Image (cartoon, rainbow, N blue to C red; front, side, top):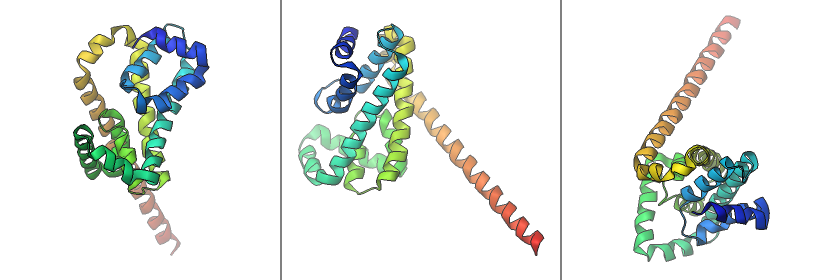
Length: 210
């Protein structure tokens, strides 16, 4: 994506224009999110944008797009899925999204951020299945934050060398996805250990009082 295009959008419409572009543009403009985010990161590195508001606006725009997909699933999910299933490309993506959901359950909302083909289908399907919004928000927004942070930083540091990064795109994402899963498992087990220790301490205290 042309760096000047991002700069022109900001100059003409401000950060609000960038937010709306990221919110609605993903549904109508066939440009991969990774390309947009790395370009915004590169623009920040070049001094055309301030890194903090650029990152915040980017994250909010992507989160708004996820939320829109989820709400569409809740409101008119059956009609949307009916239209998508008629197209072979989307039918295959829906099948992949459902497999991801079956394997990882709500955590698939976080993982889907790293999967371009199902990124907005998983929130749509969870909206259709009436997943509570609180659960959706926890997994979708946290996953989006990690994903946007990684892509933004890559664009900030290596934006002018993104042709090399894109060449090894699959390998990079496999490593990132693997590290994300390992981190999640580590945090989950740590919480379980703390909960178990807390329970044991309560039991010991009760025994001492008796």
